[in-house]
Length: 466
Image (tube, rainbow, N blue to C red):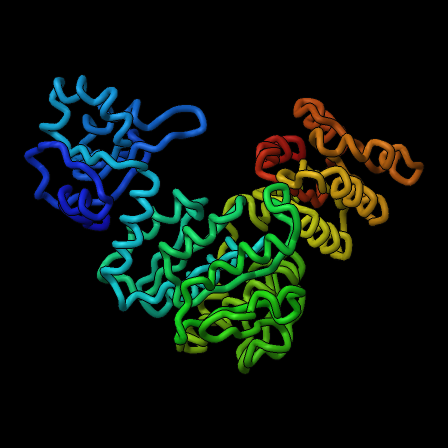
């Protein structure tokens, strides 16, 4: 756990007001936003959630050992007097600020400045950023202590928590930087101030909040906003927005891809077992399947070689990459399940469906497709487009789940679709359809936005095929 600052220093950094306490001079260790996970000596940050407010759990956080409580000043003025009378300030320092989230971000930015020797890497993009972050982090960890974003800690709340985990022993810090509203990338970039930044691609994810791909590109470009002349950005060589993304950026912009990644000598598709990569005379077994993951790997290789990682470390890092929850994870058994349902948009749907349509397989191939969310006015057209694509492909069965596919009802009535395609918005019905459809030896692809929660199908599918 990272050792931070005494409470009085945190108050100064966050422009907060410190309430009297015996612990104001003791350094706090680590930061937590969940009162149930508070550890002794840590700082608890009271943030509003989707269902509740962290301020309602200050007493629980203190009881669990929090030595510092970061609270909203207005809330404390209204309701803090009762907690003071109960002795809360005798056990934990209370730091009252205008906005706890902004204070957390300010603290994280200040913390990173303590370690100028740390190389800070930022990764963003519409698709593939989590996988690319994992690959980069895995390669860099072969050479030196590396901190990287974990789970879904990639947003205005999660990223500061990762940043506060950097210590004096850290050599590389790899941050996944995700945004779904305009202006968020500037906030994240201001915290990280990346020395190296990679944009995987510009797609249509979250277009509901941006309105156009051009606006998405402009938002992603902000990852370079605080670049200096010695900083380096990385873009896919065939990115349609390459020129716009590179224009006016301080520092250097380097392309990556089959034609640009130095030493790349070609690859061989191994199906669900991954890809055999020829690079700088080395034969590398990269375990993630598909050309899209190969491009992620080439981006990671280009970036890591730029900071001097040797070729054997690159090979070791690539070969040790493991798929993470709901992203390109292959689950083998009586049926083979590909769990790729953490996120979905038209671009990633087309990529996955195209890959599995062309994939050689002895048994049948089934696709379970969940809603694509946050598409705004594009939603109807996008769902109809994917439905039409699925009808044209040679997949044996396509099951569409969620209200978003209602727009494609007419597609499912086409003669070419009736025998192979079915749509439902009810999860129990979905389970019934699959129980009547799945056979041992099938390949089943689960693809949908996070809200569809298609990972719930994994265990039932295992039981159905047993």
